[in-house]
Length: 211
Image (cartoon, rainbow, N blue to C red; front, side, top):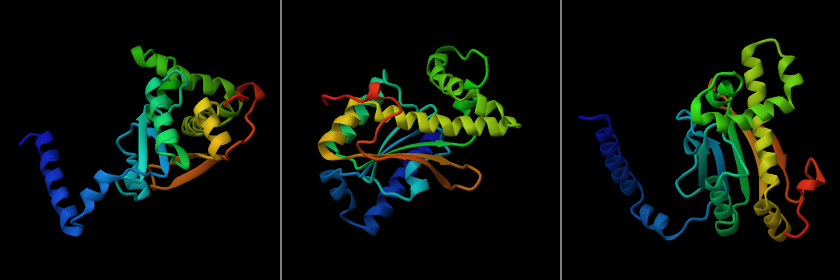
């Protein structure tokens, strides 16, 4: 049996188990989607949002990419963000990275990785902003993990700089923004930062007055 066929068998077993536990489970999922959370996370296969938060289908709207970036030219991410904020009306947006992130580690080198260089450039910029504090750390692992934390914080701020979020702040007083980091060694999520609706940003130039 091929490995992908195992996935299909596991899916059938899971569906049968869910129906036995709750005969109306899938009917309820079909009728409504009202998650309170948008999760912007890393694509790393070891960081499944639903499992590490013990949430059920329908509870978290999810977008994942390399190193959990919020890039102002990424139409994929912005489309997810707009739908989550304006249609699903999520109350919280979580940017969750993880220690030991391979994308961040690659960005700390001068090696060329091809097309992904353009993506990693965003992380290199974060390093440049915080270089003195990162370089002051003694070990490579500590420097990597500090950049991971700074990257998460910068991505949360990038969310706050979007007109999508600012419009929702001014109109609905939501969503709250959160930056979290997940530790693969013990499975624990560590909160790093929060931005409440209508907070002042790091520079007024990013604050729209007509949203």
